[in-house]
Length: 402
Image 1 (cartoon, rainbow, N blue to C red):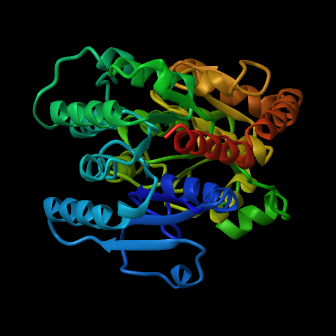
Image 2: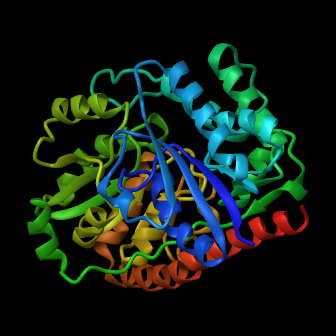
């Protein structure tokens, strides 16, 4: 008998985003494992041409004006679609998780939630950001994620925290991509036995063209320091822009390229312009995985100055494509990076050591070569197939032990 699963997601292919990439990777394995798949997702369009040739039943809900009505529509769609399913698998605790939780109160299915971060923490820092003053990176402190769990918050942040906890307590299994996030979910009162760590995987393969050809394709010459991610306060892009004048003194052809979009875009553009870095710093917007490959092929190094990271796809993809990395010791990064072996780790916003790590990669071919070689070896351990197989195993065990 066919097993049935309803997946609740905030986005799905061909729209770009974390859930899209993850689901695109695991859905073939679910189908191969005998699952009939319904996918309910909010969407920018009612349908895409790709949906017609999909092996899965895709239910897209194009957003209407007003959040409450969209959540209600999402809940009602889940209630209808998941009626004949064995499992509901929500991609997050809030926008897809809470409607899934409410639907499952009526349906009584097995319930699984994937947690890739603390949404309450993220929204708290987005809402409390400061503007750039005197061309300097703001000095507002980022609260450590674990410390935040004991911080008293009010209003929507308190509500989001309660929602996360309620959804996770109701789940039969929580899937997280790192031991660090397992610890965060543990703070929410979820028992260890209900938390499963499944590391993210990548199937990134190097592109054919070399650096110079890739640089021509993206229209940026010079020695490229690449960074990528959502443009939010904790990703540390302000500090990367701030240190560029210092780096340019020694490396005239150094260029900073930031891939991504988000609420800090205007702030970063203003900071870049105020520092006179119009031809030195490039904010190129959000890119598809295939486009990101070209930017990585063009890069001399990948730098992720982050205060918080569940488990970084970007670092994994950079290493898979042979790009040496510099990052921070935040979140799940130490589970991926071994200091001085396959990358450099510094403290978040540690200006001096961040500059020194970048200089070391520019100046020392032996260090670059070592990081490239060891990075590729690391990436080979984190495969999409392994991630998908472990996910299918957990879902099958829930049905078996019904």
